[in-house]
Length: 351
View 1 (tube, rainbow, N blue to C red):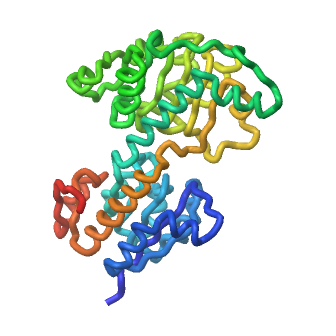
View 2: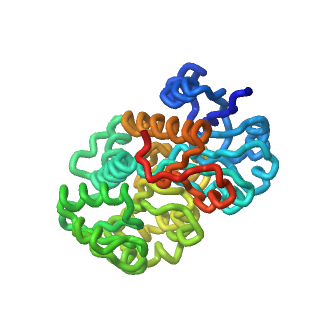
């Protein structure tokens, strides 16, 4: 009997060698091999549907390291494919309705890197607030701007807001509130009031978030409600001393509107880990601002988060193929179960 064929598609990460790429996926790769599955690793492209179809044409399953382009059109051309695994949280590049209709199981790993993302948001916020990268560039260039540049505030004199109050936002809120004494507000229509109260976070409307925050950190998923939520109108309501941090998804922020707000002084600073198009273009205006901190979509990245993802993805995938077992927390399209009666759903935990 032929082995089920799986491919791990590396998206976004650029490895210098096949060995480096294997080391990154080693935990899940070795485990899936041990479980009797035929596994390979290939380089893909988040924006190339034709390449995706070529890579997956003869595959039973795929593990995407980032936002694999899984539109209805792509999935209709892949009749053999029955399993899509997302190495991470965001599902905006996968048409879940089409996947369900075409009987394709979609899984993901919510929460695996929430601590890293929350910590990275804190790092971006404090780097921007305390002018860390601004000073670093000037000192490396031979200057010595001691006691100069934009004047920072103490966090305890600030109102810090989050757009979204999920797991990573809670890490950020604890650090900025309990750790540094900032007043905390959050906009999240799905947040439970008791969860906010435990963090001493006041839940507010989006307009209040914009108007009251000295710093806003974005932790919301990308969907119809959040696409370009931070647009020209939104920036027009923010304080002129405000700092914007984004560790969620690039298209939550309208890039052109952000550039305009920074040029005009409508807001003071930005610190960004994610962008509408990645990698960030060489000629992007964002590269030219002294008051913008940039990191390359790496908030999720850390020793423990990579280890956790390798463990979870290996076990989730093997359970699908060898046991026809699905974990409730990690199944992105539970409606597909009605079309796949041979599969069993479990609350877990993943073991």
